[in-house]
Length: 379
Image (cartoon, rainbow, N blue to C red; front, side, top):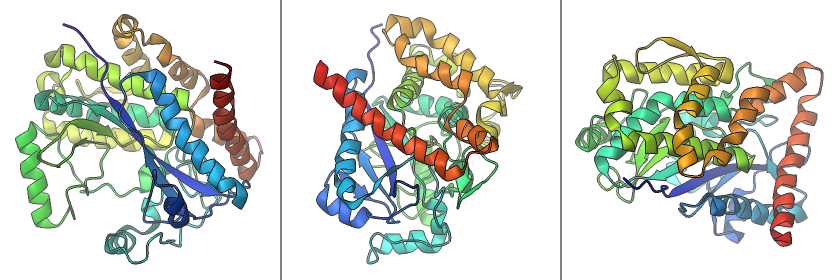
């Protein structure tokens, strides 16, 4: 069986603001000048979407080029791109509308307020075979907490530490509140149609959960898996590592669905798996790599850091076969040194002011774009 890399694409949300770390909303003006960006309901963040690519060599530039473009637009205004997935130094009491005449934005503001004013990265994997897509959705839903733990980067809100590693995931309104693990495509279609009738979903896109099927005509025409749980990952090498881990896990499932599909091998039923996954996601949002999670196979407790190490061991043979092992090295650094949220919290616990910590990360984010440009120029 020939194994090919999947198509991969990203939806990346970014905050804008001052070099001091305070948020400044420019989404309406920016999207008028930069057609590759789209508005979010709140003025302080905006989004770009990359074209699907299979090769990792192309993905890094696809992630960095829009950032450089936005940064160039921001520079004359003395503004920059901000790290962190929440309003870390911002005002979460006020909703700053990007499009006051948009009725859907009316609904978002009235229903959720600034709970939705966050940034994240959504990772899309192309899977056109529907049975395999729903097998992958079940596996990734059960392991989504691990990806949140690697990406956690939102420990602050309104100038204070919240005590969580991903404040974003704790505050973001999961919609509907309870989402099952889907048995197959028909189960998903019937469930979505029922939610629309009940009004728990406003439209077919109004499914805000850790992972969901996506495609050109949801819920009927589907062609990809969308992992939505990750906080914003500003380090592109780490984002590609997380993506490679996700892809290798899904490719392993495709090789042997009966071994890795929770529907086939778990000791728990689908409702128990859905509940376990939701609890794991919250635990990872609170303490990320240090969280005690429960394995989908049997419900037994396992340390998040240990579970990620086990996954890396499991996929290593396939990673070597596909010449992808080198892509995973940033994950080992996170396991050794902590994720972004943990590093920030250590720095503030040692007495560094929060704004100074964030300002350093603003510079590091910009340096990555500059250093990559220089390397490409040398080549």
